[in-house]
Length: 137
Image 1 (cartoon, rainbow, N blue to C red):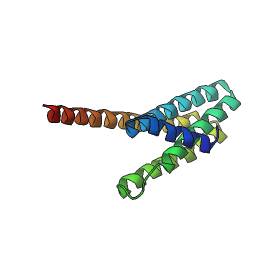
Image 2 (cartoon, rainbow, N blue to C red):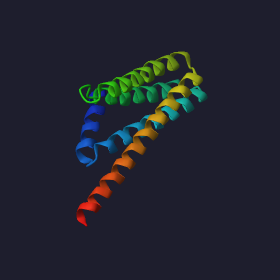
Image 3 (cartoon, rainbow, N blue to C red):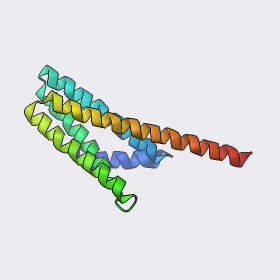
Image 4 (cartoon, rainbow, N blue to C red):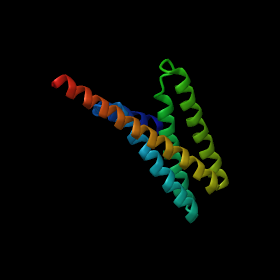
């Protein structure tokens, strides 16, 4: 699956999903899943599995990076760009060195990112539901 394929999947998911924030949750969920699979493959000495999962995770990170709109909340966007860049670079390094500790740090960051997007989506959905309820009353 190439980068353009991941981008098309992201775009299709966004188009099919009424809430684009849901696409972010799904992407980061996939990112965390692939990272855990990479760590398991690394632990087992499955270099091909490790490489495949890390490449998939990096494709998701690249998709997240390409979706950033630097004109909206530039400081926040710059922070996300830096985080995504750090994750991408450290995945390469962890793979080259078979470094489970470094991979663990990336997993921790990706998990925090996923949890933050999930929580933000839940809060915004709850706010939207409350607003809809108030206008319907």
